[in-house]
Length: 224
Image (cartoon, rainbow, N blue to C red):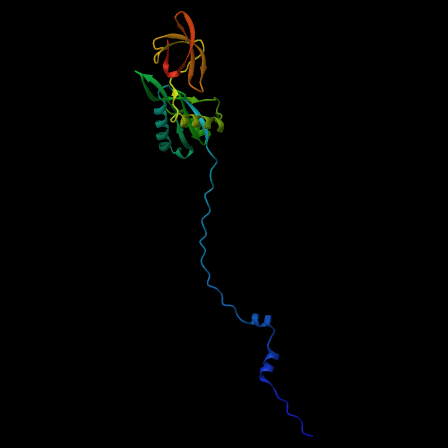
């Protein structure tokens, strides 16, 4: 008996012998993507501790000379990195001269200079040795720094005075004054009330034998 020839399908045989998809994929080598060099930023330098504000007492009238001398000595003796801002607090004030408003600057705290420092014993001695410096406010071998609230109050007052200058003179109740401007010019009186928010005074002026209250601006009166 003649055996039937077996027909072999090459495509079928290929399918039979093909590996499963996952095996086939694993067998195909992946083309590695070219690596892009990544620039690594250098580590940031560690920030030092924040400096604190201290008050230096100076001879009155030498505040600016002390500030200049302190800056030059800091450069010369190598402690400049430990010194921050040096501040002589000032404010703008206004007064009436010959009927005209005149604005000028005045020191908030004559005889004092504010300095931002990274305080230590060596710096304490170096600052005290600056000519015309009499010492730190607070005393002791390590003076107490100003609080942030006090520093901000000084800076705020200095900044706002440019927009709203303060009267040069301050007045108190029962103080005798002379009016130098307005319809009551050359009259004298006594301060009955002070309103620092509005910069006004209520002055008791004697008119025709009667004491009469008159409201005036700070600039309209002068002390007797």
